[in-house]
Image (cartoon, rainbow, N blue to C red; front, side, top):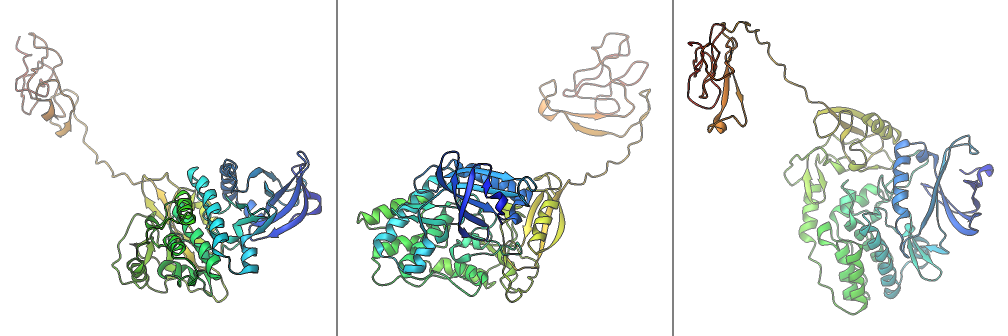
Length: 508
């Protein structure tokens, strides 16, 4: 990925040795030659830097992350890009982060398998504190998992990888650029293709707590689709008997299917862990039977279907094997096109509706095509989006490679044709077609009921009725209609709307 002639990025960051390689890119131990300090530099893969939309969003997310100053969040120091040909064989984008001397929680769990209750609660409390700071700043991580939690040599926990999980929570890339869901830490609402919120991060942290205490993941399976379905409808096995009741209550509440029933955000989770450490008993979480049955009933197609707005998409249609239904959270939504069977060995693309709505349709079509999906367009007459912008993508959620995805986009509503009206004579004597027009604020006491009935050939008196001048009575009336005022030699007088008089001109 990084060639020898690009081992110094931005004329400042000297890459020393690789620390880790993942689907998103490569992380290097580096030295900031300007400030003479160690840093970590993450160089993104060209599959991402070559996509203008991803690059724009990555820049925005990097700016947001730079504003998150907390001891439990790995600090973001800098962001840079090197255009292809400018000292680099390909376009490079990189993040410069705080270097944490320690290891990822994923490595710790791989070695220890299970952690004692005390260290687990300490880890959960520190991670929740970092998430609380992010949530207070309006940032949802959407990719909380052991690989993104660093445990320093001094025991300090640092959350990493804010800002690169915008497209599909916890989704590294394959070599072909396909999005693959690491679904073990996805909340039910994310697995269903819904929008992630602070409670989604809480769910992921609950899954991590379960894994630390049980020595196994809460949900696992042969493929991401199986795991996503388990997140939606199954309850994990009970924690081992040696886990205290109060700790069970903590984890069980974080793992509730309904986001509204969990701890609301990182701050609420932190407070709960603090209570457990202080010996204060937590309220038992509500039983999950009802919610789980509802999720299972939806997955089995037992509940009635109903349509919702186009922005609420049919997320798991491609993996519910012919059920023809879809869910978002605990709500049932409209049916989707028939699913495309997943080929053996292929991994699903995880689509999140909000990542595409409001963007140019051609841009979204190209991006989905690059993920190995078949795309068809569907025009939607609406004023809710500007013409040419995407209004919906269906199905969403976990979608097999090669599946047909429909991209709806806005077109301006058609205007009904106006029928031709014969032109009226100009001398005020001929008949015209009468048309009622509401006139707000007419000039007399009957203004609320005022209407004008124009006769195409009628002349209007426009002054008070002196002899010899065309006049207007104040009453309700018009030429050839109610007023029947007499016009002078040129045509018929027209009473002003609102009263009951006749025109007074014409006889003088």
